[in-house]
Image (tube, rainbow, N blue to C red; front, side, top):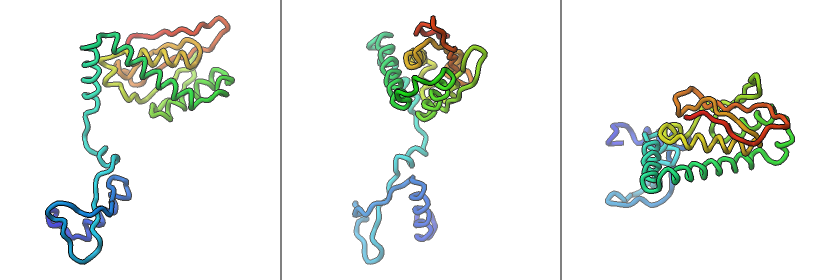
Length: 204
């Protein structure tokens, strides 16, 4: 209160608001350090930033991720980056399989694409499914690794391969946020009996 030039009551009100927002956490842990001694009055409480509160401050995760993958490439070569991208895509594929369940396979092409888009959205990709002349276009309006994928398109390529495996037939990546497009667009053609489970993609 002294440092901010306001009353202790005002400080408590601010702390109550921050606690309600989930930005700080209060505990009854005893204070520590030179100012630990307290006299009578309400019990001392300790306030600290929560994970949600720390998220309000600037971070540089993109640069850290780029540096980490660059370091991997430097010592392991392109094969190491490819292996990392494939491992990450496989984990995403498994998450999608768990969300979609077994009954999903029985749906028609359009229903499958819509449920597939819903599953991606639930994982943070803000995805929609739009009808297209030869099938469905799945549009991802958010990509959590777009800045890293600008330098390492293997991430986009491995993700496209994972989508093809999951859907059971070929898909075509038409656009990516990493390439400077507004959304990541994947074309899912309607299946025919002769459709093979291969993948087509454009370079990102």
